[in-house]
Length: 216
Image 1: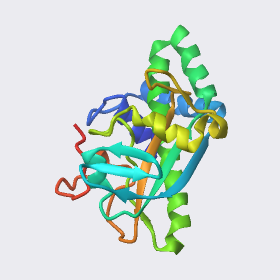
Image 2: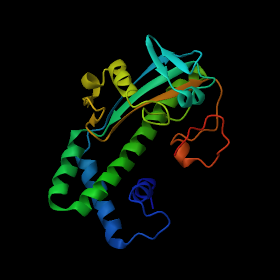
Image 3: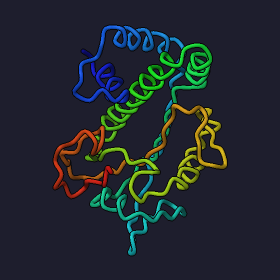
């Protein structure tokens, strides 16, 4: 079973329970449909990072306050601002399915989330390879809404990345992204290679890690 299928099953909430053949067939079919509908795009920019007192992080003129993020970025002198989307076609596919077959729509949602995560991992791998010759190593992605990293900072990241123009990613007044299967994040870069999971703390069992954020 491939990684994306396993992730989709996890998003569907099966846990350690066996997945029936019908659901597996739905998952397989959903990935095929999503592959046709998706218009993957991503953007990133690298900035100098200044960590101040009182849990303040300074990226050019943008001030961010987050204890969890500051811990994650400990030892970093560069920061990558990152945005990615599967495109509006995925939203349309899920919306059409929700009108006729809710079970299929639920599976499509889970598969789209897994596909987005896989795409972000691929993008981060590529960024990491570009930075490695400079002696820089990446930390796990950290998105607005994690821990005390307020969701409102999503607006700051999207503005600094010019997401609307570059990848067609916009945001509502309530901080919901459009297309919905999209993500923004920051990624610390330091001269020290840490044994951190790119997928983040949810995928890592090392609970005493100095860079771990609260996943509850």
